[in-house]
Amino acid sequence: MKVKTLIRLLQEHDEDANVFLVCQPSYPFEYSIDGLASRSDFPKDEDDEEDEDGDEPKADDGTKPNDVFICEGTQVRYGVKAAWVAARGG
Image (tube, rainbow, N blue to C red; front, top):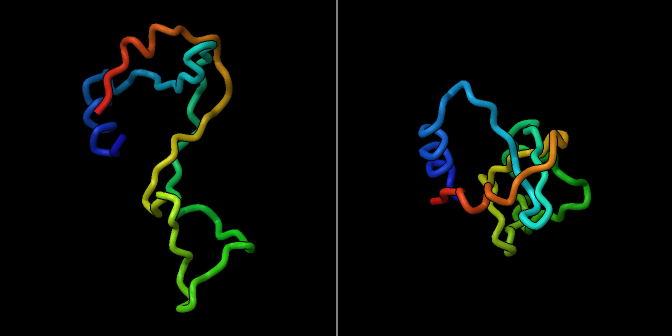
């Protein structure tokens, strides 16, 4: 899902509503959200190899520096499988 799609979908909801992450469709749980992170914000791992020019390594696994992550918080409660049936995507 692209950021612009997530923003559009969120704008369809009450801006004061709580947001949860629901995981594991076969045995769902609801989680709070701790925050967002971008791959480019990750601390550089000392084991990361730089290319010949001294630049960041070129990812050939499909990752991009602007990838965004929704970070799972704590488990709040059991979820419901119906969330996947009702889900709207991009």
